[in-house]
Amino acid sequence: MTEIFTPKELERRLRKIGDERYHNLHPFHKMLHGGKMNFGQVQAWALNRYVYQTAIPRKDAALMAKLEDRELRREWIRRIHDHDGYGSDDGGIERWLKLTDGLKLDRVYVTSQAGALPATRFAVEAYVHFVYEHPTLEAIASSLTELFAPGIHAERIAGMLEHYDFISEELVAYFRKRLDQAPRDSQFALTFVLKNARTPEQQQAVLNALKFKTDVLWAQLDALYFAYVDPGFIPPGAFRPE
Amino acid sequence: MTEIFTPKELERRLRKIGDERYHNLHPFHKMLHGGKMNFGQVQAWALNRYVYQTAIPRKDAALMAKLEDRELRREWIRRIHDHDGYGSDDGGIERWLKLTDGLKLDRVYVTSQAGALPATRFAVEAYVHFVYEHPTLEAIASSLTELFAPGIHAERIAGMLEHYDFISEELVAYFRKRLDQAPRDSQFALTFVLKNARTPEQQQAVLNALKFKTDVLWAQLDALYFAYVDPGFIPPGAFRPE
Image 1 (spheres, rainbow over the protein chains, first blue to last red):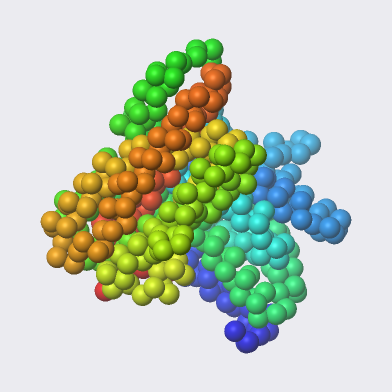
Image 2: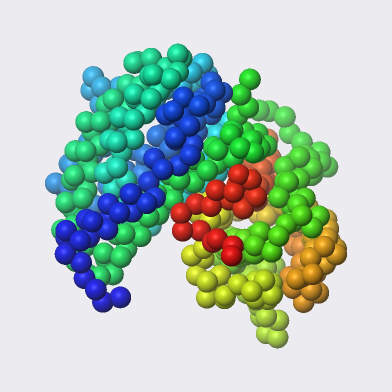
């Protein structure tokens, strides 16, 4: 492995990973956005995705625990504000709970994570551990799935409002907000990665980190599809729609 | 939570978890042992299960890193010997590779884990991390799925030899050996747990640890079933049978 990429070529390869592996390609999302799911399936999705949402500030705190550079911490802490809320903003996790409220899921049940699929928890914790255990450069690179997020959020907002009578503007507030936040965050992370991945080994590690993250997102949808769509085997103890 | 169980009642509750949640109940195993799988599906199973096998000595080393008691370490180290091999015994991982050899899988490919399902890796690493992060009592309790293993191994040996012409006595050597090892290990762990789980909180933690471990095993079969049986969606980058 001796080839070194220009920043432009590295960016092209990072974006290609999104084109080939981002979870907008997963059949579960095509069904969800296309109005092909019943109420219980949308509940299962929101309930499981909560596990991911609520882990993100821990992931970002794990990353900040590595940062010696105060300026970098001052930049990164905005992500924790965005999810946990700060000042007058209730934050993304609260907006996600507005969605699960609207889907008639009990908050205590949702936040206990008791009904989530074990595979969801394993994938999410793999992400938190990855950030703990890998160098800052790779930990930051693993956040770059946000480069691909605005497209899926726009599609989700339009698709879910159009197709489901139980989805209202208030319930999609989480995604609406992310349309602004994700590009700001991902642009910062991309600039950092392109600047700091200088050796072939670092560049390969950065590409692998982003692949890993696409696996984390994809595996969550595999588990949802398996349990709630086809063949519909719900594991022992997991949420069962009424 | 104030109820305290007698050792006998705690054992009954631990065994009940096995009756309800052990992965012998999973449809993937019923197919595997009943001769309902094709060669590629058996390959996928062996390839993915390798990821679990090869992580077990790391899990046991993580547990030993907590043990202040030399006698306990001297007992537990046998598990690492069993899997990694010691002296004239090549160990369980080598026996597993005999199985993947027999299934015409390339050793470099198998041991690279490159073709394993991401969900397999997430579940297996969740187990290793659980042992790192939880008290010794819970870490030991999570090994108690071995109480239920001899039944599944006996069923597997008989079923696979009977139903698959590509399975020979040599290829099932791993399971044959575990018929002796698992009862010895699980009896030690059970005695330890029953003796040391003295408060209601410890007893509940021990029951939860075993449930967690059944989730780890179950989730691996969910992922295999999803990718290679029904609906048969193989995630990006994972092994594709010829």
